Length: 556
Picture 1: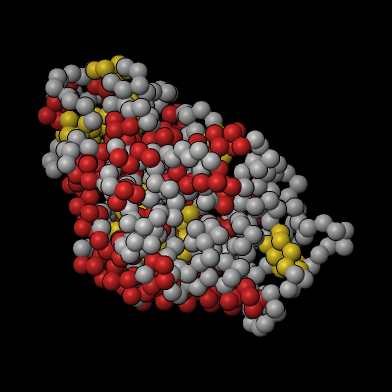
Picture 2 (picture 1 turned 45 degrees about the horizontal axis):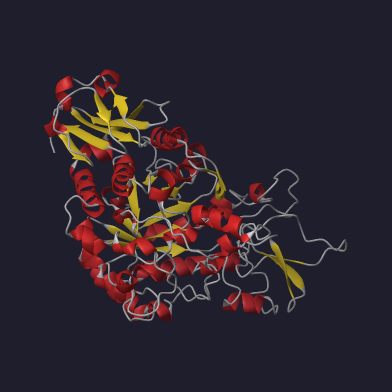
C-alpha cells in the first residue's frame, strides 16, 4: 500500500487517558470523557490523537504494564467506547494512534503466568536465567525504575529480566513466537482502523547474546547491551514488511539516548524507513543530565543545540517529531519557562517549537500553560519511577526533588474549569488536582482572546496555512546567546522569523543586522504572532520578559 506521509500536515495531541476527562464520575478519566472533548480538540486545530496505553493493566506503571494487548480496559469504557471514539475522531478528520509497548508486559499477562509454569509455547516468551552458583544475580544490569534488573520467581525458580518495574518482565524478542504475537497485535488494531503506533522504548527489544556484565556504566548498567541491540533492525524490518506495509499508517519510535545520526538509521526516508518519526530526549535535557532526577541549571544553549542539531541533520532526509511535553516529564513552563510569567512563557515556548520543521505534538494541558504540582507529602505521589528515587534521603529533601522532577506533575487531572476537581470528575479524582486550577483552566481561557489556549489555536492555524513551515530551510541566529532563541524558515521569497526571549530581563536584539533581512520586514503588520503588543516598527528592539515575536513576509 502507498505510504502517503499524511502526518506531515497535522498537529497531534497526546491524551493521558487516566487524567483527561472522566465521563462516568468514578474519578478516572475514560473514553466517554474523550468523546465529550473531541470538538474541543478540533477547535484547537488538532489533526491526530496519540493515546497513552488504554489496555487492561494492573497499573504498576500507569498502563505501561499491559495484561492484554487486544482489548480496552473496562475502566476506560471497554472496546465499545474505543470504537465510538475512533469513529467520531475519523468523522472530524482526526487520526488515532495507539501506544505499542512490546519490550515488556505485565507480570499478570497470561503469557507470563504460563511462562513461569513452563507451559509451551510460552516457556521462553520472557528472559529467564537460573541462579548463578556464586549467589549473585545473572548479571549486573540495572532497572530504570526499581533497583537491579533481575527478580527471583518462586514459581519457576529462576530469575527474570525487567528493565523497568518488577511487574514489567521483558519479552524475549529473539523467540519467533513472540514476534508473531507482535505482528498479530499490529494487525489487530490496524484492521480496526487505528492509524498507527507510538512504540515505547522500541530500541530496547533486542538484547546482546549472553547478556554480559557491564563493567563501564556507573548507572543504568547494561544499556549499551540492549539499546540498538544486535537484531533490532532485523525485527523491525520483519514487522514492517509483514504487517505495517499493508496499511497507510504512521509509526513513531521512542528512542532514549539517540543522536540524529543514529536516528537516521531508522527514519531515513530513502533508506530503511523503519519508522516515520522518532521521539528523541535531547530537547528534554536542557535542565538535567540524561534524567529529570539528575537536575542541572536550565541552559538555553543546550536546548537550542538540540533543536538545531535535529533540524539540520534530518533536513532533506527524514522528518522531525516536535515536542516539549509528554507524560514522561514535568511541565515545561516550570522547567524552561517561568511560573511567575506563566502566560507569557507558555506562549513563548509554544512559538519556539511550533514553527520548526516536523510534526508538533501537544500534551494535554500544555495548551493551557499547566504547571508543576507541589503536594505536601510523598504519599500523594503515584508514579513508580518517582517513588523509587532516593528512598534513603530525608523526606523534605526527597519532596523537593519530586516537586521538580516527578512525572506525576504531568499526570494530574486536566484543568477544564474552576468548578470542583477542575471539572475533571464529579467523583474523587485518582490523583489530586493541581491547586492552581481556579486560575489555570480551559473554561476561563475560552473567554479570553489573549489566553494561552487561544495563542495555541493561532499558532497551530498559522503553521497549517504557511507552506514555509513545512518546506522552508531552517537557520539559527544568536547561537551562543543564553537568553534569546532566534531562527528563520525560508522558502523562495517566503520568510518566517521567530525571536523568543527565555529570560525575565530586558534583552536588546538586532535581527535585521543578524539575518540580513530588510528593515521593512520588521513592520508591525508582519508580526503575525506575539505575546506582547508590537506597535512600533524597527529592525532592532528590546525584548520584554519571555516575549516572543513571529514575523512573516510572503504569500499565505
